[in-house]
Amino acid sequence: MKLFKQDYHRIAGLSALMLISALLFLFMDIQGSLSYALPRRFWMLMTIMIVGISSGIATLLFHTITHNRILTPAVMGFESLYILIKTALVFWLGSSFNWFGSTILKFAVESSIMLGFVLMLYRGLFQKTEDLHRLLLIGIIFGVLFASISTLLQRILEPAEFDILQGRLFAKLTLPDPSLILLCLGLMSVLIGITWRQRYLFDVIALGRTQALSLGIDHSKAVTKILILVSVFVAISTALIGPLTFLGFLAATLAYQLTHNHKHYLLIPMAGLLGCIFLVAGQVILEHLMGMAGALTIVIEFIGGILFLTLLMKKGRL
Amino acid sequence: MIEVQNLSKSYQGNNVLENINVKFERGGITAIVGGNGAGKSTLLSIISQLEEADTGHVLFDGQNIGSISRELLAKHLSILRQDNHLVGRLTVRDLVSFGRYPYSKGRLTQEDQNHVDTALRFLDLESLQHRYLDALSGGQRQRAFVAMVMCQDTDYVLLDEPLNNLDMKHSVAMMKMIRRLADEQNRTVLIVIHDINFAAAYADRILALKQGKLICHDCPKTIMNSETLELIFDTPVKVEEHDGRPLAVYYR
Image 1: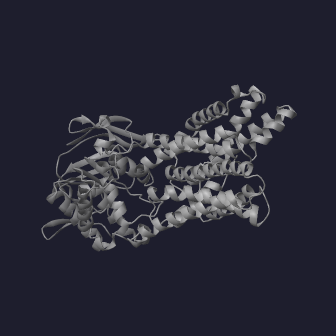
Image 2: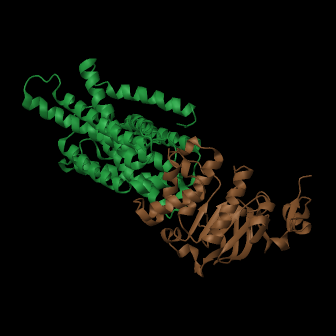
């Protein structure tokens, strides 16, 4: 019973840590005109918080349906798929196509296409196959396939268009359009609301297909539901910053380590907070303490990648 | 009553079940026996809707079981399969509490807690209830899963090899517990079991399968003779009388 309390304390501790890093992010070394710097930092903070939370929860939910702790949406090719969709849209519509001036429309179209493809390609896969290595292989093949088609399309593009596209695809912390940030924030809040309401269902899904069916759950419907949630979460984080393969993996893996009781009402806040802290605190440390702005994504990918390989070597046991 | 009609199932051209017709009356224990690959587990899986039959159907109290929603079925029929591995870290009590999901959808009421307590007591797990499952022995974990199924409070309980991983003492305790489930709580239990002597000692009826075909479905006294057993298991069996009960001897 003591351990349960410890889980709550840890969530409280992480929340405090997140708050402190957010404040540091906003006010540390602030120079010049506050009215210019503060809003800029504020929107930046919003962006990376949304990305951190979305990646953490998306990976957690993904682990829940796949019954393992290795696969992530990114490893399964979700992000490459999103990038392929972006590239294909530029390819066919041209970079000058301005979506009637609406970033929101563009995002809506991109994520709807993404949703359709994810359901079409992956739904059957997670209902039948339980073999981790086969799933991993299929995921990697999908990822490479999507990435190669993107590359092909990019080669055919005119150099000027390619240049613009390239700027949009790299994982980087530049300031997106505030209206897109607000849209993503709203969308993410809705998704988190849905996720939270289903937390007990997710606990049962995590027991495995047979147990879930035996306990009266329509498993294939639940898998579809989770895949929809995951693809929109991925669309949000990829649209705002770009592909961050291992951020969600880091957050979810650490969430399991820090939680004694693997129930979703504890894991969901834990994974969201950790994803957020990694990005915000990491950015503060790199930018202000080590003086290397912008390299955060690389550091996260590096650490996350090593952790991923280590776990894979241990056959997914943790 | 569960009625299986003309049931057939094949995997990649191999017939696992061939035209099975059988009725399971309400009450008592039915042991399903047969050699490896006889189709025992598949039969349980199809009855509990974990797998679909190729042809034929299963009637539950006269109604086609496929037309009953899973949510409703989970309150009347529960199943425990052999391969129960968990990814997450859970305590015994957490796992057992999942048995109440069909009723409370995760928000446990006092009544649910009482059911959990009863199941834990029934399986002698009270002292282990706050231990994590990954820190338990295979047998203890097996008992925790059975407690979960018991907690589901269904009329029909389907157990696929519940004696897996259990030592002698716990096998006997498990069979006694299953007997009490049937006698005291009036549940109908279908269990897949390998040890024919356990089946004969505790079950009310024995159903024997061989290569997907139904060989017999009768009371243990009728089945426990060397002729029938040799037909079922394809190995020499002697049946001797012990304490007024038949005992199959097949070790040498």
